[in-house]
Length: 245
Image 1 (tube, rainbow, N blue to C red):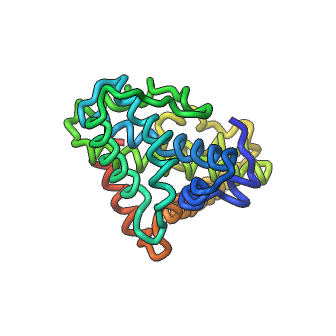
Image 2 (cartoon, rainbow, N blue to C red; image 1 turned 90 degrees about the vertical axis):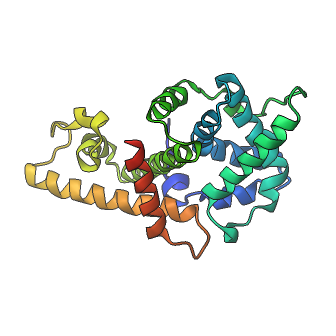
C-alpha cells in the first residue's frame, strides 16, 4: 500500500475527525471517511461478535452491516468526541446493533457500499480462533484487537514519517529490532542501511522514541480532549499482556 506522508504524517486524519466527516452530505467524503474507519476498527468488532458465538458468516455480515447502516445513518451523526473514548462508543454501538439485528433476524440485509465490502476476514478469523482457545471473554478479545489496531496505526504513521525523510529502508531494516517484533527479526542486518554500529544504536533509539510519540498521538485521537492518554496506554498494554500478544 502506498502511503501519503502529507495526509498520514503531515496532516493526519484523527479518528474523531473522521467520525465528524460521516455527518456530512457529500456522499464521496462520507464514504471515504467511513471506509477509513472501517479498515481501522473492524477487527476489534469482529473479535467481539465472534466472542458472542455468532457463526463466522453471520459475524462477517454483522460487522459489515454495522458500518454500512448503523454508523453511517445514525450513530456518527450523534457522536461527540467530548463524551468519551471512541473504543467505548463503538463497542456500545455494536452491542445495540446486535440486539436490533437479533430482533430483525430474517429481514433483508443490506450489503455495504464501497470497496471495503470485500475485506478479507480470513486473518481475523485465524486470530479469533487463537483467542477462543485462551477462553477470553468477548469484551477482552475486543480490547486486545483494539490495542493491536492502534499499534498498526502508529506503525503506519511512523513509516510515513520515515518515507517523508527518504529513510524508508532504514525503517524497514530497524523496526524489528527497535520494536521487538518477532515477525520482523529478518531485518536484523545492517546491510543496506549504510549505518555503522554506533549510528545504528542511535537510529534504533530514535525509532523507539518516534514510535512512542506516534502511538501516543494515535491513542489521543480516540479520546476526548481531556482524556488521560497515559491511563489509556496502560489499559491497552494490559489488554495485550492478558491476550498474549
